[in-house]
View 1 (tube, rainbow, N blue to C red):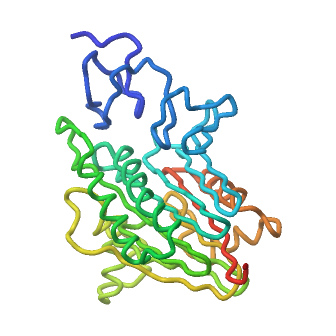
View 2 (cartoon, helix red, strand yellow):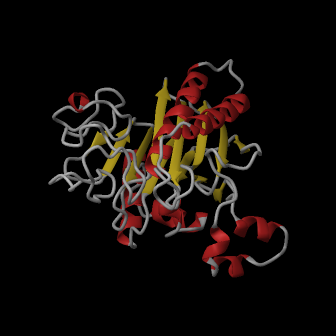
Length: 326
């Protein structure tokens, strides 16, 4: 069958044939009618949900026309997801929700590029985990640790259901995930993979998560030094992920009870590969005007990663936390 003129994969641009359900190049699921106008890439809402200002009326995410970036600004928290300068599609996704003035649920996912339909895996995982955390952020009676664990389990179950094709030489759909449940001054972070969480305030800058990777596990066992690990790309392969073939072990959790106002930042490796240390990220934050809004911080960090090469998708979520606020 000859390829239909103008029929191509919306994810990677590879030419397709009429009737194809999956892209043979990247494994992405294809729409039934690829000639329809694209709707919201963040939540999947139909095209008529996108207003003239570019904002989705369902989830509030803004997708700039003709651009490769989506943004969500909720004042006390914001997120940016950028395709970067090299990849042909964005395989990152996020969920961000604010309840009241101080309670925030955030999920950041990074589709694994060697897997099939990584972009769908990240989107479905973020949506599923976000739905669970949305309930917990609105109900302080729900146990935070249980909520985070169930959110990541929901993400895993969602990715298991992602449709994919065996025609590509790729493994099952999968992604990394880092999430945070912020209720007043109490923050709980849960993660699987190498997407990270950081905390910055007037006195400290620190990485809260530890990558699920051969590098970090080898360093912890004393098999090699951090300097040796940094020189080996293989050692940065992840050892835990969200997906049908993920290891059967619980996600890691860390609690944070800040004493001073500060910022919680969740991001994919598209950012931290260009600023791997908390001190390096802190210097980028210090260069911003005092009192810069979370949206400005997220945009600046994404822009910096692009300026330094943009070799991966970049997603950054920023949450302002003030433990002294009433």
